[in-house]
Image (cartoon, rainbow, N blue to C red; front, side, top):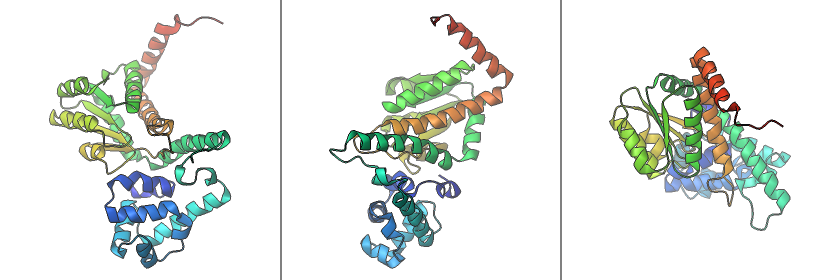
Length: 294
């Protein structure tokens, strides 16, 4: 996530995104911010360091991990977040959690908020230049391999199906053995796309590493910019989804991923121009007879 884009995203989303990669001391600062952004907005750097049982230097490193210029900007972003919560815009999802025993109205509001804001925050966090580069690589690739495990596998299938419809040679594999064999057949100019919300899925990291060894371009789609899958990839596209309690691998993360997938697909289709348009029409006509008339 670029510095400029991170300034537009909900502070709590940014903090949760980098949390897995922070040092233990930086993580203590993160938990203070997540627990009481309004309070953090009022704290001096010394007071924040004391609250997190760490040093002022660690607070500065934490700010830089978020893509912020320093503590002063952190206080401003914390104040903005607190104002949204106070106004009621974020009140129903404070901390992104659904408490045990929550009534159905609270659950519906929280889930809907998380899903809709996953799209908004992801759009703000996406780096347009990186997206353009990835679109160019996909459009020019002789072969594209897409890989994801579990919920991310559904997203991988979606990208493969979309690109296949406009005439690209693309494969999405259901397991790591198939994924690795596919990656091993890639060549220079081909593209491997690895999808992992946490960025820690070993199979996805190995898939991208194998593709890189073959000389292919590698792209990661993840929620965590400093995760292993983002580090191993040549290009990283970052989502910004906050998952709520009971929703590990939830719809919010998939909606955020699918938003990026749609952006990439439309970008590739736009570059294809008439060829892509004709391919879409041809494939639509091929299945038109499979629908019943009302």
